[in-house]
Length: 185
Image 1 (cartoon, rainbow, N blue to C red):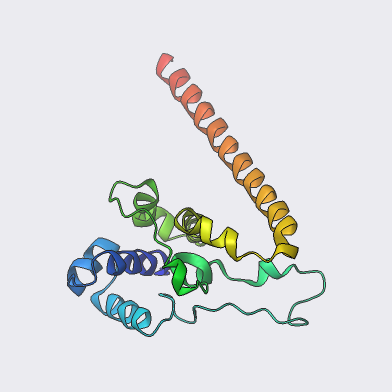
Image 2 (cartoon, rainbow, N blue to C red):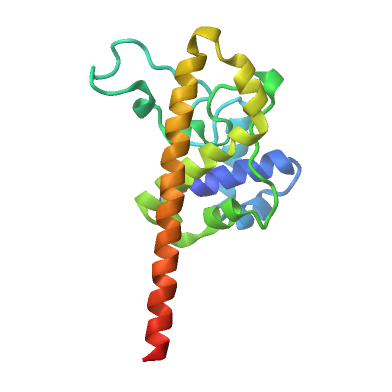
């Protein structure tokens, strides 16, 4: 099983409680103490919590196929929980530290963590969650000539997430209807 979600959760816990024991963080994040030690060391060196990730993401012109947008080449794992380069003045992005946060519940769910598509969903949700605490600073950091393009991409992304949420709502309603029909039989 890929430990991406566990490493991200461990990084959250380390940032929230830097003096906690390796074992306590490992137990809560669902990873080994050695993994927590590796994440802690990576964070101390200014790296992201994931192996092969660094805090800077570079895409050079010509490094991608012409038909592939640059955003596709940036691994979501490189963005999640501060792996993307964030100026020190902005602080590090933090996810909701509440233990009852729906995202934290999902990150600990073994059914999502054990499947590639589940891990992709967790990375996408984690990347989106980092926007909340850094939004104002990110807006200020956008060069004037890029504002319209970032606006367009943000609107497209918001529409995609809205459609995703509506699909989930329809699925929930369908499942409830199906469950109540089975009880009536």
